[in-house]
Amino acid sequence: MLCSVGYVISLMARSSPAVLSEHLITDFAFNASTLGLVSASTMVSYGFMQLPAGVLADMFGPRKVLIVFTLIAGIATLAFAFSQTAEQVIIARFFIGIGVSLSVVSITMVSLWFTPQTFARANSILCAISEFGPVLAGFPLVFVIGLFSWRGSMAGMGILILLLTFFWYFLVPEKSPLALNETRPPASFKQSFKGILIVLKCPEFWPMCMWQMFATGSIYVMVTLWLVPYFADTANYSVLEASYIISLAGIGFIGVQASVGFLSDIVFKSRKKVLIFITINFLVSAFMLVFGAGHLNYVFNIILAFMMMSGVAGSNICNTMVKETFPSSLTGTALGCFNMLYPIWTALMQVFFGFLLSYSLSQGINTVDSYKIACSLVLVCAFIALFCSFMTKDTYTLSHSE
Image (tube, rainbow, N blue to C red; front, side, top):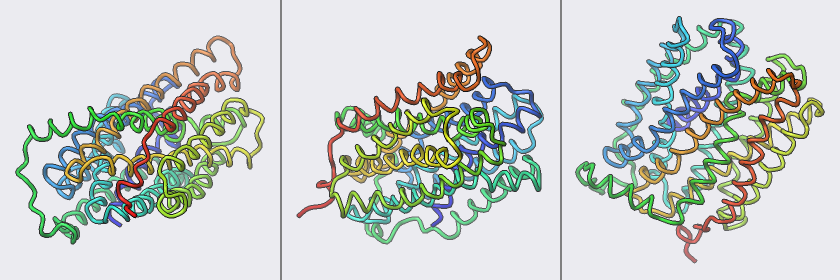
């Protein structure tokens, strides 16, 4: 449950710029390009910390790493709440990205507490609960901001994150019941480097990693920043109405996240088939994003957001496939490598999306068509992700014998 709470905070912190954008524009005079830089600073640091976080989890155990990272996230969130300049905002968001890198460590922790046959379902439940992060970063965050201002809401979040550090330290044992008799080898950076090479040289690893980059990365471009402005500008919704769409779609997506592990374990008995289906669903939502801009009513916009968010469920499947491909001693390292590229890709696309949008508007192109041009990036990524899903190797039999 603590892993789930930490994951919720991680996703909420990454998704909050979408709702905070209006306040940051007012307080710091950000335009579309600089606003993309604010969110990108979080995603860049989050991405670069995935591999170190995974390696450290393998070397020292996930509990110690979770304590340190949660502490960094709490302090950085408080710094963000009291930022007075644009530079301070970007620096604070950068360190928030470092702190919320605990998501990959949480998955590593779960892999130690559940057997290989039940990990996919446990990971599904973990990821499902984590999706309350984007839900809370929608209408509930708008409501709290209305009561306490954006600074007050961020300060409250910082305090809650610091409380989570307390719970990690006092309530979580160093070893899981499944590993009480295991002895962890001494921490060695040389062994860690060898582990990284094993992962990177594995041909089965790269289709999964590329899927994560192009699918999850491009979805987070929209969900963590641009989807609320997209709905507000193409359909003339208020920020509150647009945030309702994110929250309602996110609630529906929680059920999808919870079910994919059960579907791949029990119904289809396959990881690859479920991944392909999820990717096709994402591709359809990308078509709607581009060609439906300015034409969809409120209900269809909720469906669009729900279908797009559901694409992230493929990350759940890929996490399981990565875990099943490598030995348990390399779980953190493999997951770190797997999750490293997509946040960096998200950060680059967020900035480029903002640049395309600003440039199109400056050339006299109307708002709806400008968003269509920028959103075409997501559509291209969806096609690439579909190709990657067909190239993956099914790992179901590696954890489920006859």
